[in-house]
Image (cartoon, rainbow, N blue to C red; front, side):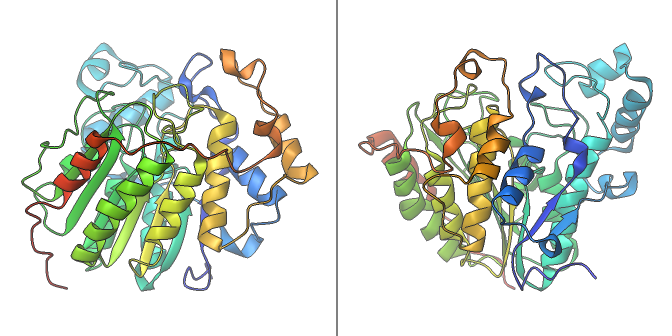
Length: 379
C-alpha cells in the first residue's frame, strides 16, 4: 500500500535523475533531485515509508495534454539519440535549448508520472512533494525552456478528472509559468498565479497578460528580495487564495529566483521559499509542491531540502551535521562561482536573509492581482 499523504507529507522522487544530464555545457548538467534526496536522507528527514519512486507516465497518460505526434517524436529521439530536421523544426527537440540526451523521453515522463501520482494520492487530502516536477514551460506539441512535458498541467488535469472544481496554481520560479497559464486560461476551474522576474525569458507574464481571465501575474524587478516576497505573499497570494477557497493548491517552487542562481537577477534567500510553503499549507486540504528551475547545485538542494523541512514542520539546523555536509562537499560545478564556493554552501541549509525596501513596482503589481477577480466556481 502506498503511504497516505494525510498521515504526513509524501516525497516522490526517482533514481533516474542521479546520472541523467542535459549535456556538459547545459545549465541542467547539475545534479538536483538526487542531491536533494541525499541531503534530506543524510539529515534523517526521509523515513522509507514516506518515500515513493516515481512511475514513468505512459504515452496514453501524456496524451491527456500532449499531442501524440509529439510524444512519438520524443520517444524516437530517445531511441535514436538524434532528431530529424522535421522534428527539430516542428517540435523543438534538439533545438532552442532543448537538447537530445540519453533520457530525453524517459526523464520528463518520470517527472510527469510523479506529479500525476501526487494528484492521485492527494485526492483524499494531504501533501506530496515532487522535486523532479515543475516543468512549467512545456507545450502540447513542442519542447520549451528546457521542458519537454508539462507535468504541472498533467497533475492539475488529474485533479480535474477526479472531480475537483477549484484549483489554484502558484508559481514562484524566476521565469513566467507560461505553459500552465495558457493551458488553463479559459478554464474557470483553475486559477494560475505566477511571480517571476520582469523582462526575463519567455518575455511574457506582464501585469496585463491574460488578466481578464483566470490568471494573474506579478512581474518583479531585479533584486527582488525577502521583504518584497513577504509583501507579495501577504498582500496578494493569501488574499487571493482566501477569495478563491481552493480545494487544492499546486505550488511550483523553482529555486532560480535565489540570489545565488546564475540564470536570474532576483535576490531571494531560501528563507522566502520556506515562508511561502508554510503560508499556503493550510489554505487547502490538498497540496502538491513541485520543483522547477534552479541552476546552482548547492542552492537548489539546500532550498528544496528546506522546503521538505517546512512541509514537515522540522527545524532547520544552524550547522549541518557531518553526513549532510559531506553530501554538499561532494558536489562540483564548472561555472565560475563553483570554483571557490563560500563555506556556507557546505555547512548551512538556511541562507542569510535578503532584506530591503518594498519598491513601488512590487506594490502596484500586487494591487493589480486583486482587481476584478472572477467569482470562484461552485464546488
